[in-house]
Amino acid sequence: MLGISTDDTVRKTLSPTVTDTPMETESSVSPSGAAELRTILDHRADRAVVDEACDTSAIAKGAALAAQEVENARQALDLLRVGAGLAEQHGEAPVTDALGTVRERVQRGRIANTIRDQTEYVWCVMETIATLQTSGGAPARSKEIQRTYERVAESHAASPLSTLKSIQDHLSDLHMLGFLRRHEQNKGLSGGQYYEYELDLDPEIVLETRTEIAEHA
Image (cartoon, rainbow, N blue to C red; front, side):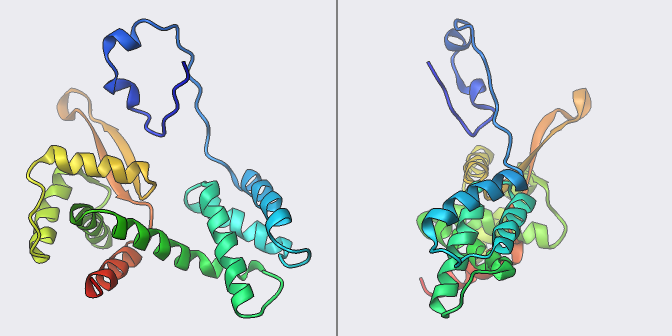
């Protein structure tokens, strides 16, 4: 049996009868670095973009930006895709290292799509963490997030999540989607073990996109 998960705590959710029986071997996949991402982009650009239409500096820039932010191949491919689309739209060729200027557009698109596809609760959780982050209050524990979340929900005349566990579930979902960074803290017997969360995106973009979608709802 092969199990694959992006959640490194998934074993804790399994029954003891499952975890105690198998002679398991665990293997983790490290995030891609700039060199690996560049290889992926080279391969994709060779097949998706016509000859001479994508400068090698664009590949290097896209790989470096993705490695710097989330070390994620999907992010790198999004940068290449949007950069190529903009170059085609404006009649420009080749795609150059100006690819870096599309990063904000990619972030806005990811945030907008996520917010549109999620419930009001998720909207408010993302807005809460963005608000905390802009004021220097993140990374934050779920208890701290809950206090600010209740005020954010009230400002939108929305019924807030009623329990801390509900907040934690939404935080875990957003972390798995790649929108949050999660930091594990262990304070020993005095403070216990817990997670702190912060956005893996520009908080200003989150707040601006949230406002734009709310205005057109």
